[in-house]
Image 1 (cartoon, rainbow, N blue to C red):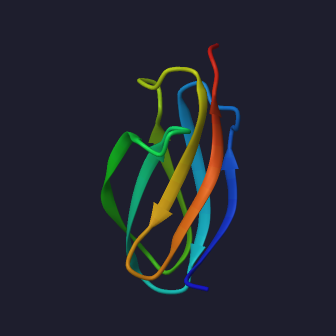
Image 2 (cartoon, rainbow, N blue to C red):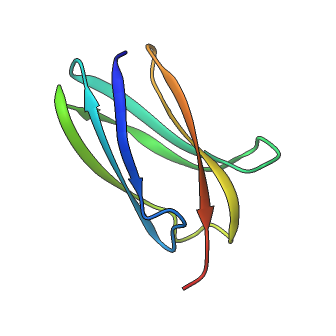
Length: 88
């Protein structure tokens, strides 16, 4: 595939989550958090990443506690991962 997600940590998350992934090619990637009803809870502007190993940090501190789905997507792939937001 175009992307291999190695880890998403910490999960459960209090504020920020780190995404560790490998890309086959340089790519523009978008990220969004969805709630259990499928509504967008938080959108992130797309970023450009290099081919190979990448780590990026997303800030979820404004979200209420609960279960969400993190969507990682662009024109070539669309992946979803469950993320639990907890208090300190």
